[in-house]
View 1: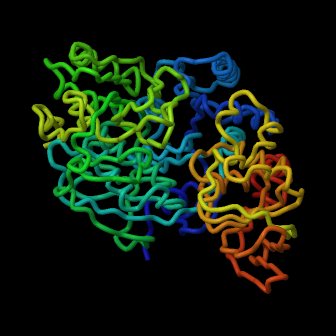
View 2 (view 1 turned 30 degrees about the horizontal axis):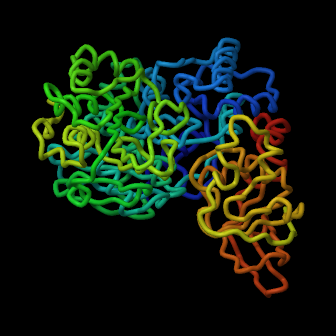
Length: 429
Length: 164
């Protein structure tokens, strides 16, 4: 009986052969991340641990992305403490404006295929897009890693999803992950890893693959792993990552569950108000009036998201009564979007483009609080009641193309029904 | 490691924001927040809870936000253990890391029933109701962390993770 990617990576990092689902192992971590929203607790735990040295500090990044910019003095003080700690211990610091943790870690070349990466955020599953076992932890876990370079893990069972066929123009990884949420439901993959494989993954660019792994957090997944291919290794190499050690699943690996999705038949998907797993085809949500159109977050704030929006909105105006805000996932993404003229095109179309960060994902900065009755269409990952600071407004989720098409018309719109909505990256042949 | 305590019953899908609402962070300390634990679904729970008691809940106990404060607050109330049908993934980790015993099983009990948990044997019992449940024993590595009172005291005693 063979092994899953999760069993192989965790087993190898525990110093032996592949582990088995259900085993508890103490494994060596390759890189760790702490962001500002979890820093208070983590720094307190590190202090409690009272280690004489923190040898793993150089393989740890602190990222100031949630309180970006800090909305109150408590947040500003958290950033101050993170800066001082990073300086003292040699931690890699990504300060306000550099971008979202899950974007700056891969862009910084901090890990490679086959690695084990932990971060104080559920969306640390993102690193699985690069064939790394990325998973969310909390402050005590992080303090243990910083002192010892190791952490205990229960080896997860894996759900294998074969993505057959190919997503149609105007349909994106976001639509697939929303479809998964409709099928497995919120936290439906709790404790488990997910492996995504198949022709649709092979055809995806890295940006879209990151969405696939990232949004698995809403399924409750511990990790969401893809196999590496030439696109993966070229992307990592260009960013200075170490030599990749790709890990493949065995053909006879033992899975908790295995099923196939025919991607060619999938239309754009919408998660309706308040529930991330109340998912319908865009046809069933079409015509819903929207007041805000938001693109950004660790799930969908990457370059291809901004390109999707610009393909639809360049030379046009968003509908009267719609406010559109775009938050690039990182400074790199922002700069490249500027070089390509996307920032100018979107600003002329009536959108506001923010500095890189977690942006409008959740009401922690207070810079976007919706009004009573306001309806939001967003490319973010969660939409529970009150997430944007007002329980009397509604949040719908779709791909960045769907958000842009909806901003154009003022109502939820299938991107395939508007010019430019069929844009796809040139490289994705 | 064994635990004996009276049941305090809670329902399904008690997420960490119900344990300790984000409206108190940053700002209020854990002692304050503990006095407001579960106020949305069980007002007065902290004052009814007796130290050494066991929380018995349904599915997805501690799901959604991974905030570790949810467990710190339970420790502060004196919770000795939690039995639930299932747990949020990170909440389960946080409990073990903070020395709070967690057991996955379905236990039809009422407030005040005495619960006995034996983690090494993998056994949960409610003598008054003649209920005995066999559950998978926690792996030795996890039992060692629990026995030490959590990951921080464990690593203080075993900086090499107990390898030597």
